[in-house]
Amino acid sequence: MIELKHALWELEKVSDMTQLDNFFQIYLGKKWLLNEEFKILVALSPEEKKDKGAKLSDIKMQLTAAYEQKQQHFMMGQINEQLEKDLVDISLDIPSEQGSYSILAEVRRDAEDICKSMGFIMEYGTEIVTKFENFESVNIPLTHPATEMHDTIYLNDKDSSGENLILRTHTSSMQNYLIKKYGLPLRAVVPGRTYRFENMDASHDTMFYQMEGIIIDKDISVAHFKEMITKLLSAVLHKNVETRMRPGYFPFVEPGFEIDVRYEVYNKITWKKELSNWMEILGAGMIHPNVLKEAGVDSTQRSGFAFGMGISRLAAVRYGIKDIRYFTNGDLRFAKSFA
Image 1 (cartoon, one colour):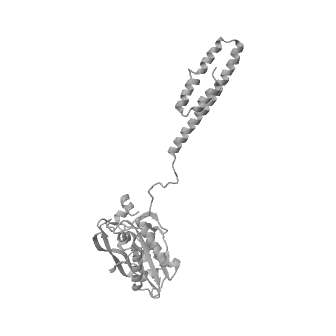
Image 2 (cartoon, rainbow, N blue to C red; image 1 turned 90 degrees about the horizontal axis):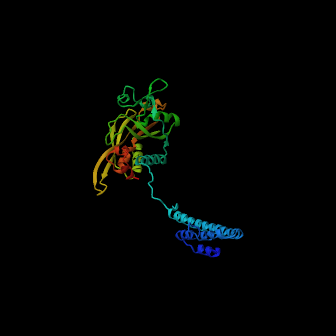
Image 3 (cartoon, rainbow, N blue to C red; image 1 turned 180 degrees about the vertical axis):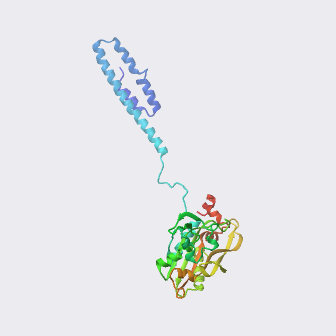
């Protein structure tokens, strides 16, 4: 008769699934050793058959239980081994692409922070305004060509007087509001998007980000403006800028002038200068007496200046970019080169 102790000892020596399969075929498979023992039961007396049959059944049950336990042990070992191979160490840094501000947003934020450090109030306003806010409040009569539909984007929505609302063509539309809200003396900037019907080219776009600034106080002169704007531009452009003032016409200032800065472009490989020219960076001037009067300010007692600069052109000068259309053409290669 098969010895249970010897069979269990054989099972204990099994070290892998292949050996375990061999053990199963020898002891518990179709040609198992116990099968021969069960065949002998046929020739035995009922009493012997009962006694030996019970012993064989007990041996079979114990061997089967031990075999299944061993099989479970090997299966768990295989699973754990596979899990170790598939384990992801979450403590490791995984290279990934991270977003960043566009250079337009970066220059805009820099300009806003610099203006705040210079004591300017920050006011954003709305992009949809009335014709009064956009034109009449800043001394642009409704007969002016700029009010025509080929220059200004009109909306179907109406204001309280039944006039069509418009997308602001400049952030100067906030001047009247700022004076009435904050009183005098006043030092404020209005950054925001503006919209115009423009022929798009290297320095013009139909939508652009503008920053309007005004200072109103006693005895403000062009000299104050010149000093302030030179410091502001130098801080935003990260260099001592060379500026040029030219006479210019804007209905809401008198006198008016345009400010150009020296604009240089370098080859990114050889770093040789490819272009050196002047770029108009902002329009400015002393606030027109009619604008002050419209806001309830006595122009004989107070004076001030206003300036409006385009963020796209500032970014172009700061980074040496020839065409502002690169900023909005959706080319990720261009955007990532400044990330």
